[in-house]
Amino acid sequence: GTDEREAAFYAIVDSDGRIEPRDDMPEAYRKTLIRQIAQHAHSEIIGMQPEGNWISRAPSLRRKAILLAKVQDEAGHGLYLYAAAETLGVSRDQLLELLHTRRQKYSSIFNYPTLTWADVGAIGWLVDGAAITNQVPLTRCSYGPYARAMVRICKEESFHQRQGFESLLTLTRGSAAQKAMAQDALDRWWYPSLAMFGPPDTGEQVSGGHTEQSMRWGIKRFSNDELRQRFVDMTVPQSEVLGLTIPDPDLRWNDERGHYDFTAPDYDELFRVIKGDGPCNAQRLAHRVAAHTEGAWVREAAAAYAAKQRAKTQT
Ligand code: ACO
Image (cartoon, rainbow, N blue to C red; front, side):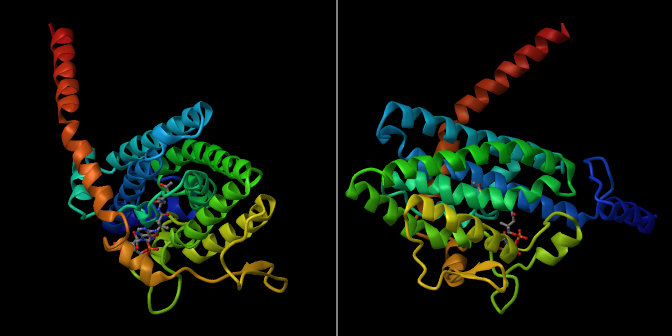
C-alpha cells in the first residue's frame, strides 16, 4: 500500500541511499526536484548571455578561447540538467515552454549586466564560486541522476572559478585603471552574488521556504544562510590575495563564531529581481525566446534526419 511505499522511500533517504528514476517517490518530492533541476538548467543556459556578451571583445586570443570554452561548458551543464529532469517524467520542450512563459525561474544573478571586461573575471570568481559552494553538497543529493550530474558540473565550475580569479589577478597587477576596473566589478557583483543563495533562513521575508522540507528529503544538505556564510569565509582571503576591497564596511572576522560577520544582501532587491524586475530580465528572456525561435529549423532538420535513419534501419 501507500504507507509501505512511503516507508521504503524514507528508508532509502534516511540511510543516505539514492532514489533512482524507477523507484517510488512522493509526488511532492518529484515536483520539488523538477522545479529545482529545471531552474538550475535554465540558469545555466540563461547564464551564457552575460558572458557571451564579451566573446567578441575579449582582450586577447587566449582569453577569447577560454571564454568560448567556458560558455560552451554552461550549455553542456544545461543539457545534463535537462536530461536529469527528464528522468522525472517531463520533457525538455515542456520545461523550455515554462521558462519562456515565465512560469519557471532562473537564477537572479543573470539579470545583472556585464559592463566591462573585468565583469567576466568577477563572474568566474564570485558567481561560479558561489555556484560551487551551493552545488558541491548537491553531489550528495538523494536523487541519483541529479547527484551524478553535479559531479562533473562541479569539476568544470571549479575550473571556471579559478580562471576568473586568474583573470582578475592579471588585472589587479596591471595599470591603475585596470585595477580600478577590477574593484568596480567586485563592488557591483558582491551583493548579487550573496543573494544567489536565496532568501534568509528565518525572518518575515522567507519566501517559498522550501529548505526544511528539502533537507528532510536529502535534496538540500545545508540551509541558504549556512552556504552564504561558507562562501563569505572562503572568498574574503581570496580578495586579500587580489588586493581588492569587499564593499562591506562591517565585514570582519568574528573570533567567537569562527566566521566572518558581514552585511546581508538586500533581499527586497532579490525578490524584485526574482519577480522579473531586475536590470536585464526582459532582455535575457527576449534573447532566449528569439534564439529558440530562430533555432526551429535546426530542431526540424535533426528530427527529419533521425526519422530518415530510423526508416533505414527498419527496412
Ligand atoms: N534566484 C531566483 N530564484 C531564487 C533564488 C535566486 N537566487 N533563490 C531562491 N529563489 C526562489 C526559489 O526557487 C523559490 O521559488 P518558489 O517559491 O517559486 O518555489 C523561492 O525563491 C524560495 O527559496 P527557497 O525556499 O530557498 O528555495 P529552494 O529550496 O529551491 O533553494 C536554491 C533555492 C538554493 C537556489 C536551490 O534551488 C538550489 O540549490 N538550486 C540549485 C542550484 C542553482 O539553481 N544554481 C543556479 C545558479 S548557478 C549557475 O548556474 C552558474
